[in-house]
Length: 436
Image: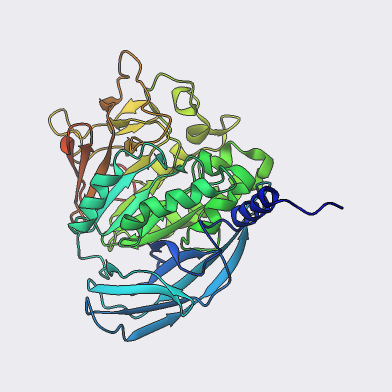
Protein backbone atom coordinates (compact mmCIF):
# COMPACT_ATOMS: atom_id res chain seq x y z
CA UNK A 1 0.00 0.00 0.00
CA UNK A 2 1.47 3.37 -1.04
CA UNK A 3 1.83 6.04 1.69
CA UNK A 4 -0.44 9.03 1.43
CA UNK A 5 1.07 12.14 -0.09
CA UNK A 6 0.90 15.58 1.54
CA UNK A 7 -2.19 16.65 -0.49
CA UNK A 8 -4.10 13.53 0.52
CA UNK A 9 -3.17 14.05 4.16
CA UNK A 10 -4.45 17.64 4.03
CA UNK A 11 -7.70 16.44 2.48
CA UNK A 12 -8.15 13.87 5.23
CA UNK A 13 -7.50 16.50 7.89
CA UNK A 14 -9.98 18.91 6.33
CA UNK A 15 -12.58 16.15 6.10
CA UNK A 16 -12.08 15.31 9.77
CA UNK A 17 -12.50 18.94 10.80
CA UNK A 18 -15.57 19.22 8.62
CA UNK A 19 -17.11 16.21 10.32
CA UNK A 20 -16.48 17.76 13.71
CA UNK A 21 -18.19 20.88 12.48
CA UNK A 22 -16.30 23.82 13.94
CA UNK A 23 -13.93 26.08 12.06
CA UNK A 24 -10.46 24.94 13.03
CA UNK A 25 -9.98 22.23 15.62
CA UNK A 26 -12.97 20.90 17.61
CA UNK A 27 -13.66 23.29 20.46
CA UNK A 28 -15.35 23.37 23.85
CA UNK A 29 -15.85 27.12 23.52
CA UNK A 30 -19.61 27.90 23.60
CA UNK A 31 -21.32 29.32 20.55
CA UNK A 32 -24.90 29.80 19.31
CA UNK A 33 -25.97 31.01 22.75
CA UNK A 34 -29.68 31.70 23.16
CA UNK A 35 -32.33 32.05 25.85
CA UNK A 36 -35.83 30.70 26.27
CA UNK A 37 -38.48 30.95 28.94
CA UNK A 38 -39.32 27.54 30.43
CA UNK A 39 -42.78 28.61 31.58
CA UNK A 40 -41.80 28.73 35.25
CA UNK A 41 -41.81 32.19 36.90
CA UNK A 42 -38.37 33.37 37.97
CA UNK A 43 -36.59 31.07 35.52
CA UNK A 44 -34.68 31.26 32.25
CA UNK A 45 -33.06 28.54 30.13
CA UNK A 46 -29.66 29.11 28.53
CA UNK A 47 -28.81 26.90 25.52
CA UNK A 48 -25.54 26.70 23.58
CA UNK A 49 -23.43 24.42 21.39
CA UNK A 50 -19.93 22.96 21.63
CA UNK A 51 -18.10 20.53 19.36
CA UNK A 52 -16.71 18.31 22.11
CA UNK A 53 -18.19 17.11 25.43
CA UNK A 54 -17.85 19.69 28.20
CA UNK A 55 -19.34 20.74 31.50
CA UNK A 56 -22.59 22.77 31.27
CA UNK A 57 -22.34 25.76 33.59
CA UNK A 58 -23.72 29.30 33.70
CA UNK A 59 -22.14 31.96 35.90
CA UNK A 60 -24.31 35.02 36.47
CA UNK A 61 -24.89 38.03 38.65
CA UNK A 62 -26.18 41.60 38.79
CA UNK A 63 -22.98 43.58 38.25
CA UNK A 64 -21.87 44.39 34.67
CA UNK A 65 -18.23 43.79 35.57
CA UNK A 66 -16.27 41.88 38.15
CA UNK A 67 -16.98 38.40 39.50
CA UNK A 68 -20.20 36.55 38.67
CA UNK A 69 -21.14 35.07 42.05
CA UNK A 70 -24.07 32.82 41.08
CA UNK A 71 -23.70 29.36 39.49
CA UNK A 72 -26.08 26.96 37.80
CA UNK A 73 -25.32 23.56 36.30
CA UNK A 74 -27.19 21.70 33.59
CA UNK A 75 -26.54 18.96 31.11
CA UNK A 76 -25.47 18.35 27.54
CA UNK A 77 -27.00 16.05 24.96
CA UNK A 78 -25.33 14.70 21.84
CA UNK A 79 -27.10 15.64 18.62
CA UNK A 80 -26.12 13.78 15.45
CA UNK A 81 -27.31 15.50 12.29
CA UNK A 82 -29.05 13.30 9.73
CA UNK A 83 -26.80 14.36 6.83
CA UNK A 84 -24.19 12.14 5.21
CA UNK A 85 -21.38 13.45 7.42
CA UNK A 86 -23.34 12.62 10.60
CA UNK A 87 -21.92 15.74 12.26
CA UNK A 88 -21.95 15.75 16.05
CA UNK A 89 -23.05 18.75 18.10
CA UNK A 90 -23.24 18.90 21.89
CA UNK A 91 -26.27 20.93 22.94
CA UNK A 92 -26.01 22.33 26.48
CA UNK A 93 -29.00 23.43 28.57
CA UNK A 94 -28.93 25.13 31.95
CA UNK A 95 -31.97 26.45 33.79
CA UNK A 96 -31.52 29.52 35.97
CA UNK A 97 -33.94 29.62 38.91
CA UNK A 98 -34.88 32.15 41.56
CA UNK A 99 -34.41 35.18 39.33
CA UNK A 100 -35.68 38.48 40.63
CA UNK A 101 -38.53 39.74 38.41
CA UNK A 102 -37.69 42.47 35.92
CA UNK A 103 -34.03 42.64 36.93
CA UNK A 104 -31.07 42.78 34.53
CA UNK A 105 -28.55 39.95 34.85
CA UNK A 106 -25.11 39.46 33.36
CA UNK A 107 -24.03 35.92 32.49
CA UNK A 108 -21.56 33.76 30.68
CA UNK A 109 -21.82 30.07 29.87
CA UNK A 110 -19.43 27.21 29.26
CA UNK A 111 -16.85 25.38 31.33
CA UNK A 112 -13.20 25.66 32.36
CA UNK A 113 -12.48 24.31 28.86
CA UNK A 114 -13.91 27.50 27.37
CA UNK A 115 -16.29 30.34 28.27
CA UNK A 116 -18.58 32.51 26.19
CA UNK A 117 -18.36 36.28 26.32
CA UNK A 118 -20.66 38.04 28.77
CA UNK A 119 -24.28 38.62 27.81
CA UNK A 120 -27.10 40.53 29.49
CA UNK A 121 -30.78 39.76 29.85
CA UNK A 122 -33.68 41.13 31.86
CA UNK A 123 -35.72 38.51 33.68
CA UNK A 124 -39.43 38.44 32.94
CA UNK A 125 -41.76 40.09 35.40
CA UNK A 126 -44.18 37.83 37.23
CA UNK A 127 -47.94 37.97 37.49
CA UNK A 128 -50.36 39.49 34.99
CA UNK A 129 -50.23 43.19 35.89
CA UNK A 130 -47.51 44.34 33.54
CA UNK A 131 -47.19 45.17 29.83
CA UNK A 132 -45.03 42.77 27.77
CA UNK A 133 -43.44 43.99 24.53
CA UNK A 134 -42.60 41.45 21.84
CA UNK A 135 -40.89 41.32 18.46
CA UNK A 136 -42.80 38.97 16.14
CA UNK A 137 -41.70 37.58 12.77
CA UNK A 138 -41.17 34.42 10.76
CA UNK A 139 -39.13 33.29 7.77
CA UNK A 140 -35.72 34.65 8.74
CA UNK A 141 -32.84 33.10 6.81
CA UNK A 142 -29.09 32.88 7.16
CA UNK A 143 -28.94 34.57 3.73
CA UNK A 144 -30.68 37.91 3.14
CA UNK A 145 -31.70 38.42 6.82
CA UNK A 146 -32.89 41.94 6.07
CA UNK A 147 -34.57 42.75 9.38
CA UNK A 148 -31.86 41.36 11.65
CA UNK A 149 -29.61 44.46 11.99
CA UNK A 150 -32.58 46.59 13.04
CA UNK A 151 -33.78 43.88 15.43
CA UNK A 152 -30.32 43.86 16.99
CA UNK A 153 -30.47 47.62 17.52
CA UNK A 154 -33.96 47.35 19.01
CA UNK A 155 -32.70 44.65 21.39
CA UNK A 156 -29.69 46.74 22.46
CA UNK A 157 -32.10 49.60 23.24
CA UNK A 158 -34.19 47.35 25.50
CA UNK A 159 -37.35 47.58 23.38
CA UNK A 160 -38.60 44.01 23.92
CA UNK A 161 -39.21 41.46 26.63
CA UNK A 162 -39.26 38.43 24.29
CA UNK A 163 -39.21 37.34 20.65
CA UNK A 164 -41.81 35.19 18.88
CA UNK A 165 -40.24 33.54 15.82
CA UNK A 166 -43.18 32.08 13.91
CA UNK A 167 -41.42 29.28 12.03
CA UNK A 168 -38.77 28.89 9.28
CA UNK A 169 -35.19 29.35 10.45
CA UNK A 170 -32.02 29.66 8.41
CA UNK A 171 -33.31 28.02 5.21
CA UNK A 172 -32.61 25.32 6.26
CA UNK A 173 -31.19 24.32 9.63
CA UNK A 174 -30.19 20.93 8.19
CA UNK A 175 -28.66 22.26 4.95
CA UNK A 176 -24.98 21.55 4.22
CA UNK A 177 -24.91 18.92 6.95
CA UNK A 178 -26.41 21.41 9.45
CA UNK A 179 -23.72 24.05 8.89
CA UNK A 180 -26.40 26.49 7.73
CA UNK A 181 -28.11 25.89 11.08
CA UNK A 182 -24.86 26.72 12.86
CA UNK A 183 -24.47 29.91 10.84
CA UNK A 184 -28.04 30.97 11.51
CA UNK A 185 -27.77 30.39 15.25
CA UNK A 186 -24.60 32.48 15.32
CA UNK A 187 -26.36 35.27 13.41
CA UNK A 188 -29.27 35.53 15.84
CA UNK A 189 -27.08 35.29 18.96
CA UNK A 190 -26.99 39.10 19.57
CA UNK A 191 -30.80 38.99 19.87
CA UNK A 192 -31.42 35.49 21.18
CA UNK A 193 -28.75 35.61 23.92
CA UNK A 194 -30.45 38.71 25.38
CA UNK A 195 -34.17 37.86 25.05
CA UNK A 196 -36.27 34.72 25.46
CA UNK A 197 -36.38 33.46 21.86
CA UNK A 198 -39.67 31.57 21.60
CA UNK A 199 -40.31 29.50 18.48
CA UNK A 200 -42.66 27.25 16.57
CA UNK A 201 -41.74 24.89 13.70
CA UNK A 202 -42.24 25.77 10.05
CA UNK A 203 -42.04 23.75 6.85
CA UNK A 204 -38.32 24.42 6.43
CA UNK A 205 -37.60 22.53 9.65
CA UNK A 206 -39.14 19.25 8.46
CA UNK A 207 -35.98 17.35 7.47
CA UNK A 208 -35.10 14.30 9.59
CA UNK A 209 -38.37 14.57 11.55
CA UNK A 210 -37.70 18.19 12.63
CA UNK A 211 -34.59 16.97 14.45
CA UNK A 212 -32.48 20.12 13.99
CA UNK A 213 -35.32 22.28 15.27
CA UNK A 214 -36.07 20.07 18.26
CA UNK A 215 -32.39 19.74 19.21
CA UNK A 216 -31.41 23.40 18.94
CA UNK A 217 -34.32 25.13 20.69
CA UNK A 218 -35.42 24.60 24.30
CA UNK A 219 -39.13 25.29 24.51
CA UNK A 220 -41.45 24.53 27.46
CA UNK A 221 -43.39 21.29 27.73
CA UNK A 222 -42.58 17.74 26.74
CA UNK A 223 -43.18 17.79 22.96
CA UNK A 224 -39.74 19.18 21.97
CA UNK A 225 -41.24 22.51 21.01
CA UNK A 226 -43.77 21.18 18.50
CA UNK A 227 -46.53 22.64 20.68
CA UNK A 228 -46.55 24.35 24.08
CA UNK A 229 -48.04 27.33 25.90
CA UNK A 230 -46.91 29.92 28.43
CA UNK A 231 -48.19 32.94 30.30
CA UNK A 232 -46.77 36.41 29.76
CA UNK A 233 -48.32 39.33 31.64
CA UNK A 234 -52.05 39.52 30.79
CA UNK A 235 -51.64 37.09 27.85
CA UNK A 236 -51.70 33.33 27.42
CA UNK A 237 -49.55 32.44 24.38
CA UNK A 238 -49.93 29.16 22.52
CA UNK A 239 -47.39 27.87 20.00
CA UNK A 240 -48.40 24.97 17.79
CA UNK A 241 -47.32 23.14 14.65
CA UNK A 242 -49.21 23.63 11.41
CA UNK A 243 -46.79 21.14 9.86
CA UNK A 244 -48.50 18.11 11.39
CA UNK A 245 -51.24 18.67 8.77
CA UNK A 246 -48.79 18.37 5.86
CA UNK A 247 -46.05 15.88 6.72
CA UNK A 248 -48.37 12.99 7.46
CA UNK A 249 -45.65 10.38 6.86
CA UNK A 250 -44.55 11.14 10.42
CA UNK A 251 -47.96 9.98 11.61
CA UNK A 252 -51.54 11.22 11.53
CA UNK A 253 -51.63 10.66 15.27
CA UNK A 254 -49.68 13.91 15.73
CA UNK A 255 -52.60 15.87 14.28
CA UNK A 256 -54.99 14.25 16.74
CA UNK A 257 -52.63 14.60 19.72
CA UNK A 258 -52.01 18.27 19.08
CA UNK A 259 -55.69 19.03 18.49
CA UNK A 260 -56.78 17.45 21.78
CA UNK A 261 -53.91 19.17 23.60
CA UNK A 262 -54.98 22.51 22.12
CA UNK A 263 -58.56 21.99 23.24
CA UNK A 264 -57.50 21.15 26.80
CA UNK A 265 -55.14 24.11 26.91
CA UNK A 266 -57.81 26.51 25.62
CA UNK A 267 -60.28 25.20 28.19
CA UNK A 268 -57.80 25.94 30.98
CA UNK A 269 -56.95 29.33 29.49
CA UNK A 270 -60.61 30.30 29.54
CA UNK A 271 -60.94 29.26 33.17
CA UNK A 272 -58.05 31.63 33.92
CA UNK A 273 -59.31 34.45 31.72
CA UNK A 274 -59.97 36.84 34.59
CA UNK A 275 -56.21 36.93 35.27
CA UNK A 276 -55.01 36.62 31.66
CA UNK A 277 -57.73 37.90 29.32
CA UNK A 278 -55.77 37.70 26.05
CA UNK A 279 -55.31 34.38 24.23
CA UNK A 280 -52.72 34.62 21.44
CA UNK A 281 -51.71 31.77 19.14
CA UNK A 282 -48.68 31.39 16.86
CA UNK A 283 -48.49 28.87 14.02
CA UNK A 284 -46.48 28.97 10.82
CA UNK A 285 -48.90 28.44 7.91
CA UNK A 286 -51.90 30.82 7.93
CA UNK A 287 -55.55 29.91 7.45
CA UNK A 288 -56.13 32.88 5.13
CA UNK A 289 -53.93 34.95 2.84
CA UNK A 290 -54.19 36.84 -0.43
CA UNK A 291 -50.77 36.02 -1.87
CA UNK A 292 -50.28 35.08 -5.50
CA UNK A 293 -49.14 31.50 -5.02
CA UNK A 294 -50.63 28.06 -4.41
CA UNK A 295 -49.98 27.80 -0.68
CA UNK A 296 -52.56 26.22 1.62
CA UNK A 297 -53.96 29.57 2.71
CA UNK A 298 -55.00 30.42 -0.85
CA UNK A 299 -57.41 27.47 -0.96
CA UNK A 300 -60.94 27.98 0.29
CA UNK A 301 -60.87 24.81 2.41
CA UNK A 302 -57.34 25.13 3.76
CA UNK A 303 -56.05 22.20 5.83
CA UNK A 304 -55.11 24.38 8.77
CA UNK A 305 -58.53 26.04 8.77
CA UNK A 306 -60.77 23.02 8.04
CA UNK A 307 -58.56 20.08 8.94
CA UNK A 308 -57.85 16.79 7.21
CA UNK A 309 -60.36 15.94 4.48
CA UNK A 310 -62.02 19.26 5.24
CA UNK A 311 -63.61 18.00 8.46
CA UNK A 312 -61.09 16.46 10.86
CA UNK A 313 -59.21 18.56 13.43
CA UNK A 314 -59.68 21.94 11.77
CA UNK A 315 -58.45 24.85 13.87
CA UNK A 316 -60.72 27.73 12.90
CA UNK A 317 -63.81 26.35 14.67
CA UNK A 318 -61.71 25.40 17.70
CA UNK A 319 -60.10 28.82 18.04
CA UNK A 320 -63.42 30.61 17.50
CA UNK A 321 -65.20 28.43 20.05
CA UNK A 322 -62.69 29.32 22.77
CA UNK A 323 -62.41 32.99 21.87
CA UNK A 324 -58.81 33.21 20.66
CA UNK A 325 -58.16 36.94 20.28
CA UNK A 326 -55.11 37.16 18.06
CA UNK A 327 -53.62 34.63 15.65
CA UNK A 328 -50.03 35.17 14.48
CA UNK A 329 -48.78 33.52 11.29
CA UNK A 330 -45.88 33.67 8.82
CA UNK A 331 -44.93 31.45 5.80
CA UNK A 332 -45.97 34.11 3.28
CA UNK A 333 -43.02 36.47 2.84
CA UNK A 334 -45.09 39.60 3.31
CA UNK A 335 -47.23 41.32 5.93
CA UNK A 336 -51.01 41.09 5.89
CA UNK A 337 -53.56 42.16 8.48
CA UNK A 338 -57.08 40.79 8.28
CA UNK A 339 -60.33 42.20 9.53
CA UNK A 340 -61.76 40.20 12.43
CA UNK A 341 -62.97 37.06 10.67
CA UNK A 342 -64.66 33.70 11.05
CA UNK A 343 -65.62 31.39 8.17
CA UNK A 344 -64.96 34.14 5.60
CA UNK A 345 -67.31 36.53 7.37
CA UNK A 346 -65.92 39.92 8.37
CA UNK A 347 -66.86 40.52 12.02
CA UNK A 348 -65.67 44.04 12.75
CA UNK A 349 -66.62 45.66 16.01
CA UNK A 350 -68.02 48.62 14.10
CA UNK A 351 -67.41 50.47 10.85
CA UNK A 352 -65.50 53.24 12.61
CA UNK A 353 -63.59 51.01 15.06
CA UNK A 354 -63.27 47.51 13.56
CA UNK A 355 -60.83 46.22 16.20
CA UNK A 356 -62.75 47.57 19.19
CA UNK A 357 -64.91 44.77 20.58
CA UNK A 358 -64.34 42.61 17.48
CA UNK A 359 -66.71 39.68 17.04
CA UNK A 360 -64.05 37.33 15.70
CA UNK A 361 -60.31 36.64 15.89
CA UNK A 362 -57.75 38.99 14.33
CA UNK A 363 -55.14 37.41 12.03
CA UNK A 364 -51.68 38.88 11.41
CA UNK A 365 -49.30 37.33 8.83
CA UNK A 366 -45.72 38.49 9.43
CA UNK A 367 -43.24 36.50 7.34
CA UNK A 368 -41.09 39.23 5.79
CA UNK A 369 -38.04 39.27 8.08
CA UNK A 370 -35.85 38.28 5.13
CA UNK A 371 -34.58 35.08 3.53
CA UNK A 372 -33.08 33.81 0.29
CA UNK A 373 -36.54 33.25 -1.23
CA UNK A 374 -37.23 37.01 -1.25
CA UNK A 375 -40.70 38.57 -0.89
CA UNK A 376 -43.98 36.98 -1.96
CA UNK A 377 -46.28 38.92 -4.32
CA UNK A 378 -49.97 39.52 -3.63
CA UNK A 379 -52.91 38.95 -5.91
CA UNK A 380 -53.90 42.00 -7.92
CA UNK A 381 -57.01 42.69 -5.86
CA UNK A 382 -57.25 42.14 -2.09
CA UNK A 383 -59.91 39.87 -0.64
CA UNK A 384 -62.87 41.47 1.20
CA UNK A 385 -61.45 40.26 4.52
CA UNK A 386 -57.96 41.69 3.89
CA UNK A 387 -57.47 44.99 5.69
CA UNK A 388 -53.85 45.84 4.77
CA UNK A 389 -51.09 44.27 2.68
CA UNK A 390 -47.42 45.28 2.77
CA UNK A 391 -44.81 43.73 0.46
CA UNK A 392 -41.71 45.03 2.20
CA UNK A 393 -39.11 43.51 4.50
CA UNK A 394 -39.90 44.07 8.15
CA UNK A 395 -41.25 42.69 11.40
CA UNK A 396 -44.05 43.24 13.90
CA UNK A 397 -44.09 44.86 17.32
CA UNK A 398 -46.71 43.57 19.73
CA UNK A 399 -47.40 45.40 22.99
CA UNK A 400 -49.88 43.77 25.37
CA UNK A 401 -50.62 46.92 27.32
CA UNK A 402 -53.16 45.51 29.77
CA UNK A 403 -56.18 43.21 29.93
CA UNK A 404 -58.22 45.27 27.47
CA UNK A 405 -55.73 46.87 25.03
CA UNK A 406 -53.15 45.42 22.61
CA UNK A 407 -51.03 47.58 20.30
CA UNK A 408 -49.75 46.15 16.98
CA UNK A 409 -47.24 47.90 14.69
CA UNK A 410 -45.47 46.80 11.52
CA UNK A 411 -41.92 48.07 11.01
CA UNK A 412 -40.68 48.44 7.43
CA UNK A 413 -36.98 47.77 7.04
CA UNK A 414 -37.21 48.92 3.42
CA UNK A 415 -38.33 52.35 4.68
CA UNK A 416 -35.63 52.66 7.34
CA UNK A 417 -37.80 51.60 10.27
CA UNK A 418 -40.97 53.47 9.31
CA UNK A 419 -44.16 52.23 11.00
CA UNK A 420 -46.36 51.15 8.08
CA UNK A 421 -49.22 49.70 10.13
CA UNK A 422 -50.50 50.74 13.54
CA UNK A 423 -53.66 49.42 15.20
CA UNK A 424 -55.13 48.92 18.65
CA UNK A 425 -57.18 45.87 19.61
CA UNK A 426 -59.67 46.62 22.39
CA UNK A 427 -61.82 44.00 24.09
CA UNK A 428 -63.84 44.14 27.32
CA UNK A 429 -62.80 42.13 30.34
CA UNK A 430 -66.17 40.40 30.58
CA UNK A 431 -67.51 37.69 28.24
CA UNK A 432 -64.08 36.91 26.84
CA UNK A 433 -64.66 33.18 26.49
CA UNK A 434 -66.68 33.71 23.32
CA UNK A 435 -67.39 36.40 20.74
CA UNK A 436 -70.47 38.28 21.90
